Image (cartoon, rainbow, N blue to C red):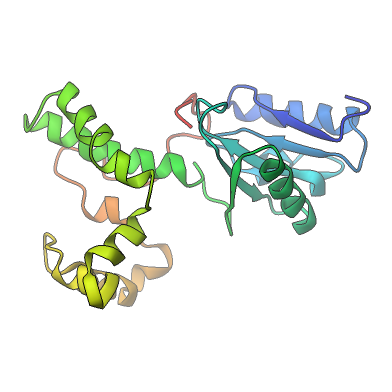
Length: 224
């Protein structure tokens, strides 16, 4: 690693192992090289905590299978240089990936949290005997999954709203206790707003996981 310009670390998502590994890579690589982590659940602020040069450490989280799926989530830690984040974005784009920059750290990043939110509903529907496992997978693969490959949920809802766009769509979309837009207003005015639960937590069903938190930091999840 003595001559490396860019290192992509992909060790198991175990907190102490990763911290130790980052410290060792920090010593083994040139001080101006970039060390990126494929971590699916740990934040860079944790991983860079024992590094002498934490400013060059960044999360570069791909999705499995990485040779097929273009997306890479890029986010720095508390001590990461903004320039390093941009350099990592440029590097991933240069090799044909589709990098997105997260504005702040969140455990589990974005894509794994979205996958977890969807799966909570999938598990609920199977538990309630609405459909079986194979049909649940088909419902995602042959419906929303194909649409999401072309348009994200925000653009889809904006299109579905017609002339009024996503605002009109949310006002007409049925929700458990009123239109979606009204629920959003109530949530934003709530005293809990600064630390409010995600929409999946507010919509959680009896008997299902209530917390929107990502699994324990030492997750072995490799779905992302």
